[in-house]
Image 1 (cartoon, helix red, strand yellow):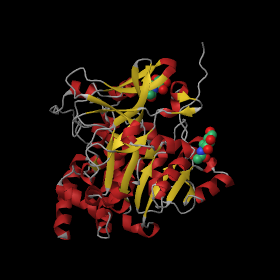
Image 2 (image 1 turned 30 degrees about the horizontal axis):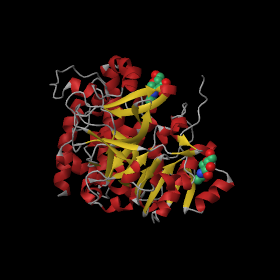
Image 3 (image 1 turned 30 degrees about the vertical axis):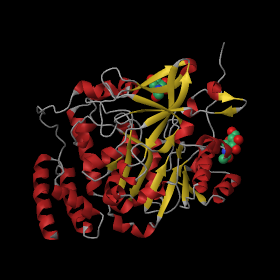
Image 4 (image 1 turned 90 degrees about the horizontal axis):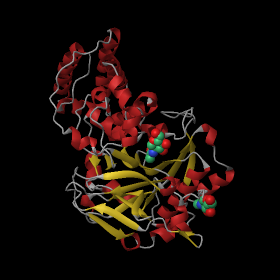
Amino acid sequence: MVLLIYTTFIYFAIISLTETSLPTITPAHKRTLDLLSSDQGQFIIENLQKISDKIREEEVKAPEQEDIPVTYDYDSITRNTDPNHTKAHLQFWQNLSPKAIATYKQDWKRFIANLSPYSSFQSKYDGTGIVFTAGNKDTLNRTLTIISIMRDYGCNLPVEVWHLPDERFSAKEVKQLEALNAISKDLSGPNLVRPVQKKRDAEKQFQIKAAAIINSEFQKVLYLDSDNIPTRNPEYLFHSKEFEETGALFWPDFWKTHPENRIYDILDIPCSDTWEQESGQIYLDKERAWVPLQLAWYLQSHHELYFQLLNGDKDTFKYAWEALGAPYHMAETFLGMAGTMVEGRYCGHTMVQYDLYSSGYGEASPLFIHANLLKITDKTHFEQDGKERPWDTLKRYTATRGNTWLHPEFYIAAHGRACMDFTHPNGEPEVILEPIDDIIPGFQERYFELGGKGGEKRVVEV
Ligand SMILES: *[C@@H]1O[C@H](CO)[C@@H](O)[C@H](O)[C@H]1NC(C)=O
Ligand SMILES: *[C@@H]1O[C@H](CO)[C@@H](O)[C@H](O)[C@H]1NC(C)=O
């Protein structure tokens, strides 16, 4: 069996040498990648090493321009691309030379070829737990509330909260974490697989997500953003059939990737009319997800390039898995949103991610309340008597399962509030509005009782 796989692999390797690229994903190659996480993988790794050494000696040549048949609908995708991201990067995509693309492609393939297998690190990992990254007072404050809520739900999984070296928590904060069976972890610590020393020269530190997951002591990880609040104990999805089958659970985002985005060429995958990933929650089994997780780390750590293609860290996971043909499960139900009315129009400031179809909570049961825009939303309009009620109404489309004909919209409301809305101008499904207090009773009260942070107070100039 192993011999057969090896022979098949070498066959593709020979083809790949003549094309200066590693094989395209075939069932045999997929199997090879699976093997990379096993002991037999060492054998293959050594051969990949030889291949990549050869590649290294060759000069990278720009490929011939070929006419690739278009199999997607340009307009159907571009009506859903993130306008901000496209505006900022379209020119960069159009100016990337074929030679640059070929070089970037070769670089990540070489990285994969040189990777050490999971078995080399296995002794570092054990059990199941939750991983956060929280680098400042604000994100730590939010994280503490989320851990308290999960403890309230009866979730006893151990928690790690990762920070960069210059963001060390105070003794008091460490104690607060410990009281919740959570520990603070330094991303520059000794003996880590992927230590991070430096801060990215930007406000958001997106590139540390994969590093935190890899460095975590857990073998199976639920990664959560510090503004992402589960509505119930999220542990059960580790036992879902989808997790058991794939070792990777992802959730969708409001956007699609622009057809002119060169990420498709660099990663050697076809452009398709599908939703991007929203990485505020990820379930991974590192043993099975080892190789694609390392590629996600690679894309994140080369953020100077890849964040001009992908919109922050979020899609580095899905695209890494796609590039390697590795299995994952994308939650079937399209995300909804939570928010309030602002001056006559619905303003969604929170993403609502639904449970998996199979897990018995029904088609559209909210599992993660990801308040991604809440923190940059002026709270004046949802604050009464000093109490905040940011989640008034949940808005979602009907018929969202596997549906790509939907129309999420981003707009700026009064006082510069960032808002999302769902519209249906061109035959998209109907939208439903539901009172949050009916859908997740007591959620909002409990969040604020446990020290939850809502919107910000802006000085409104009159
Ligand atoms: C959109 O881009 C502008 C600058 O181009 C930036 O100020 C704004 O925050 C962006 N909005 C979002 C929601 O990313
Ligand atoms: C978060 O900060 C607010 C003050 O801004 C405080 O009232 C609240 O108790 C803090 N929450 C936690 C969990 O420490």
